[in-house]
Image (cartoon, rainbow, N blue to C red; front, side, top):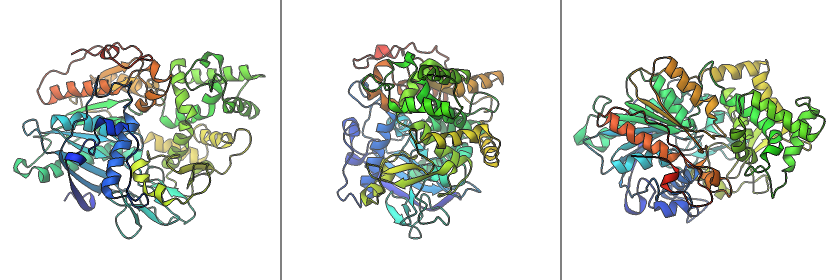
Length: 580
């Protein structure tokens, strides 16, 4: 029993109609309607696991008929094996992180490969399965996951319930919970581990990854005792992740003093380098404030999702007017205000191509969700004390208060880890007027641009996120979409790679043309036409890393694949520009 584990290790066996990779759904089932619960208010652990895996796949991969998954790239074979899951805690942390090892029956005992992955975004424990599981399990690697102190184990202060190790809801005090806030008032709303643990978990994402690797090695001893012991000396560990998960494995690369990791592949990483690029909260709070107005500029008239039936969304015009009234924009008419908002973004490093892709993030209100949630995490605020008047409440489809037990029971399987969504609303107490979100967003932006005690505390937390320099002999590959509208390359990957090279490191870097952040958005009409998926390039980078760390081949430095947009037809291999 590793000393950092809390409580028991849960071991389950999976095969046939309940395998490791797709919970028995196969590719068609993963792409289909959400799996059903026999009793919606009381789903079983097996039902929750199946739907959590399906949700994680659909949130990361484009499984639609035009996307090409399973036909042009990727596959979802049935992989039998066991899962070992537990709660783990870093020294000094208030809240645990969830760890999981998937040990396939067909483990490659010659290669002895362990893939360690951190969930994307704020997703739950299966949040990297479409990347790490889909690549590693079919080739006989075991896969260790961490939710990196985030996840969907929401705690409802109204009834004192959270999420137990098996995914079911339980009352505080009756079982170890994924997250249980200390002394939460009953009217504080919904508590989210990433945002309300008071740990600022993002600063420790690298340590979460390394601890998951240690957990994976310990569980391999249990899974294959005739092959024990498993150590970093006799087992090759490849770390991988995308988005926040990509940032987590790059953090781990800089902390790996024990040489646990043999190679790292990071896809579209949210990575911060001190003195280089821009931090997520900086550009997210700026985008939340200015992008709706900037997208009203005429150059974005043909941009997918930037117009509704050819017309400008009313919220865009309201934002321009509100910013002008607040003195945050120049321009005496609407067109001039939109142009000024765009110029302010250009001055911050935004390009038109990235702004166009970010129309999706803007329309879906993701910038506000990120800025509000991360402000709470960085300021280490408990539930009920979020900055700028925000709170999370259970709501119905109309945004009205709700206590639906069935919705609450499904949170662990359905939620992406950061509301709003899945019956949890982001409620702003200072929201009013024609642009109700504006006052709260200006408050959030003030936390970055101001000099209040909270602003100074937030800057200190952001400084603690900075990646450290990895050791010189650690192979590292970064893959990022050139059109990423959520984690733009010019603020993240490019400064990181340039810093590595200036420090004598030799990372591989693919900046993939026509690729963006959200594979699941590629199924949207008009949006997928202009893009290609990024997962094929992450898989290919993992292939080359495998050949290097397992087979001993030199790590190639191939040119960036030349892609072309998918268009309105189905994806074909020629669009990816990948060669053998």
